[in-house]
Image: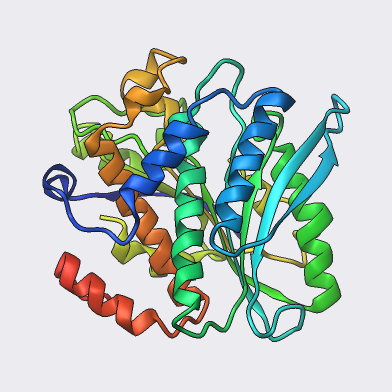
Length: 333
């Protein structure tokens, strides 16, 4: 039986506080967050500005993007996902093994959405920049797809439409295998103070081990939570784990879930369950971009970059292994 589990990975506070060199460019992510990911993205006018900026950022590194439009079933509103495909040599064939990295770009009404989910969008864009640059120097075997979902806050309509209208038909038509999907949903908020981390109702009864770890850690908000399925997403968690110190439901539960499993993990800083955001819905603005939080985001983005390099079969893997060993003084095997 498939069970959903919650894993909590703690980061070394010294690494956040005193700073480590990262592959992810903090200044570029600051630019994205301050320029177009710190304004409300609730109505179509606001969202169109964000989509245009996302497309420009992708095109700047040679990635053409497309807009996938869909209709929200309940409201009949038109939504729009942004998709960019970094093709591997076997794209469109049964020999391709596809990786998907995604984040939603919409916000609640009136919310600036710097953490939720400007940080996820910034991380995906930065990963796309790095992987595109590496493609000019190293070969890569598998396709990477970058997706920016609309309407997460309207019943996950964007990710649901992507899975049903785009991904499942592609997998069926080409016999392509999806070896991993990562949903980035809030990667910015780091709060190392005791009692800064809340738990949702019934969390302890469903996930007792994670709840116990959180209690032993004095309920500090200095970790990233990973949600996955115990017998489907094991390989993704194993690959991501050494580098870590929502919409995923659409990939878990879809029209062909009995016969088609899509390995998927969900990364989050727990959003409004952490720090001041527990009490202030509107406190997701530019003030979140502290040096400590930006370092946290950079480390999370590095973990995504490293995961994509390895899972996409890039020949840059050995070089990056050596770089991580030097930067973090860890064994990456």
